[in-house]
Amino acid sequence: MNLERLAVRARLRSPWESIDLGIALARQQWWPLFLVWLLPAALLFGACYLLIPESPNLSLLLVWWLKPVFDRLPLFLASRSLFGESVSALAALRQFFAQNRRDWFAWISWRRLSPTRAFDMPVTLLEQSSGAARAARIGVLHRKHASAATWLTLTGFHLETFLLIALVALIYLFIPEQVQIDWMPLFGGDTQWFEWTVNALYLLVMAALAPFYVVSGFCLYIGRRIELEAWDIEIQFRKLRDRHQRERKHREKSKSRAPLAAQLMLLCALGIAAGAAPEVRADSVDTPQEARETIDEVLAGEDFHQLEQVSGWRLKEIDWTQSEFPEWLIALLEWLENRPRDTDQESGWGPLSAC
Picture 1: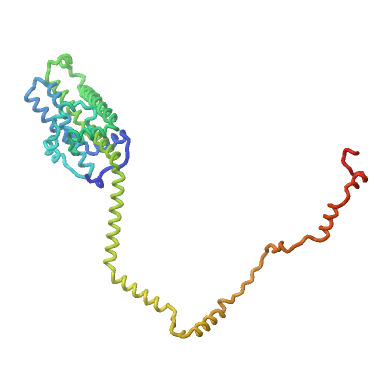
Picture 2: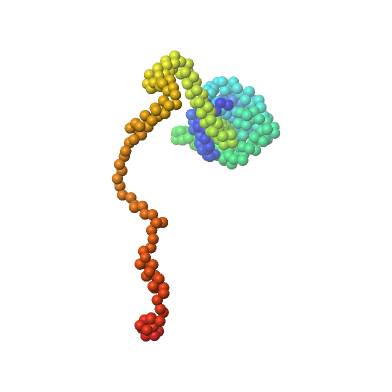
């Protein structure tokens, strides 16, 4: 299963979105899906007409009961198309017996009336699971989407009934008014040709709706697997890996194509750097005395004696540690501390209660 060739976008979908996706895919390939379902069923129906012409309803019941057998070819065709493999209707018909080799008896016996048939069949057909492995897989899948698969089956059954009634009514509308038909013998079962005609119309209705039913169930199965196995994340990682590999191959190819140009550019860069580098004469300094003289000359240069004048406002710096209280302030505080207490009463400046 090549996920990179998936024909639809791998993302999480609700069950009803998956069913809508299945209907859209079935519309695109309806004709081959219709043919691969109709031709085997029509052969069986024709054989019943030749072998038991007196039992048209039994023939229709046999075809209806073998629906799981006929559903496998549309499922095979849809699964190949979804992963980018083109299979013709003729090639799919050649796979009829090969696709119905596994669990055919179970699908026409105790699994026949399963309401989740379209949802469960990919486990048998695509995963090739059976027995305990199939039961475990079905249990995981049915934790979600099982109710949607049941509603899909019920809807398909009712659509078949309504379309059959509508088709019979449409044929009746095309009968001219001048033609007088005695309907009582027909409904009374006196003519078998009428029953065979109605059953043939029902066969066409089943074949017309089978692609939508099968592909919708298959898309439910695909949506559940995307949710369980994180196909969307895996596909993104594969794309990142492929892009990284392409970029690495492109870099390696670029390096192998222009090694000479890279060497020439390197040589040119080295030549330019050698020409632009200042000449260093380390052998001109022989003694420590000459080295000190060279250092003094460099320090006496203009680079180390640049003056810069900066003007602006700033706070005045005051050294508060060296400041002292004035003598007169100290004397005033001492006089206030040592003056006599009775002068306040004599002068009349006593408490407010003495007034």
